Amino acid sequence: MARTPAPGTRDTILTAAAGLFYEFGVRAVGMAQVVEAAGCGKNLLYKHFPSKAELAAAYLTLTRRERERATTEALRWSADPADRLIALVTEIADSVRRPGYRGCAFRNYLTEFPGDTDEPARVAQAYLTDSRAQMDHLVLGAGGDELLTDRIWLVVNGLYSASPAGAPVAVDWITEMVRPPEAP
Image (cartoon, rainbow, N blue to C red; front, side, top):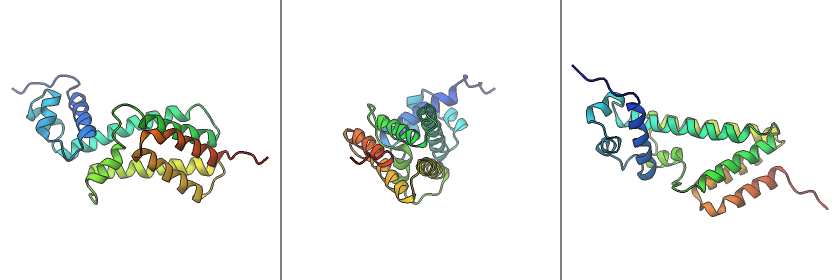
């Protein structure tokens, strides 16, 4: 008779895989490493995640939920679109300065697997598409136009890939774009 997995086993496996995938990249991490990090057997891993692609998709879905929680928290303090946009960029700037930051998980995945259309790629693409739509909504709500949206999106993309030391400059720049100083 097969044993019943301990409660939370799936989450334990996913947490172990997420840490490895983020630190080393999905391509570089083998399922044996996940088994070792999670402290489970190979059969148990494959029971919850029949393939590495399913595990990678679950990792990106988990990461999306975490990013959405952080975004919701950042946006909840103001109704003004310009303030919300600045708060969102500030939250991103803060996240890239955290110890252990290794880039945007979604952009990292798409860089590792360019052109892929599997489930993890769809999760990553959907997150980036939805993030851009949210940014568009905030910029347009703050009185900006498509050009301003493109410029702000470019700065945000830069935040995810540049030195964390530039994060405060990015926030200042976005603030100047949406709240230009008044002429003397």
